[in-house]
Amino acid sequence: MAAPRAGRPTREQQVQRHEELLTTALDIFLERGFEQATMEEIATAVGMSKRTVYAYYEDKPALFKAAVRRAIVLYTIPREAIEAVVTQDLEETLVAIGQQRVTNMATPVATKLQRILGTQSFRFPELFNESFERGAGPVMEVLSELFARYSKEIIVTDPARAASAFLSLVVGGPTRIIVSGNVMDEAEIDERIRFAVGLFLNGMRRR
Image 1 (cartoon, rainbow, N blue to C red):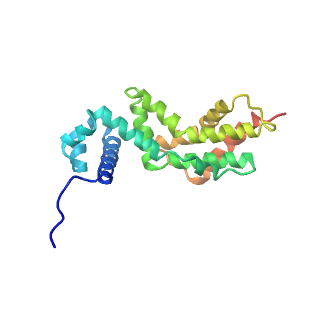
Image 2 (tube, rainbow, N blue to C red):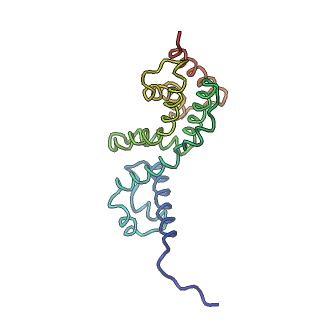
Image 3 (cartoon, rainbow, N blue to C red):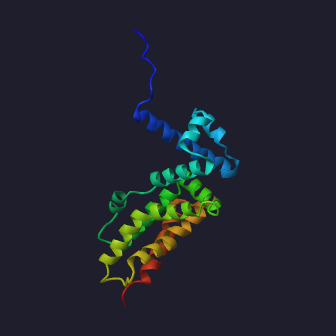
């Protein structure tokens, strides 16, 4: 049987190769840092010519931003997954949401992504802001709706700000510890989250 003739890659193959480029670029940026990573190194690692890589992205900053934006999308918890942990108990729901978000942020790639965003925030401030707005967008929406729904039990004049404060207090602390390289077991994470949720709700409950 004759070998299949070589031809232009299909649309699906082009999309796959582009995704491979962004995945490989992100890995190299995470491991080597923005300054040390090179377009040539990325091209070689993904098995492309430099010319092909430059056909996708005009320079290293453009490739960096595309790789980071794709990572933000990939590691964003979808709204459906957040809604799945919502129960009739507000406090337990908030604990579950906190645990879900901290667990997600503790994954190796998410941790590295936070580190590189922190170190490169001066160069790409828009990415740092976008990582919060897009990455936290679904959970912010769910939290805002929850706080509005429980307005008879808690005082919430601004649900969106309350959601932001919740993430800072409940999720921000454990996440900063994990990103800094320290290890916390599940019991310690659970204890920190429950304490922070209790503190948060005690400050909002109607007297």
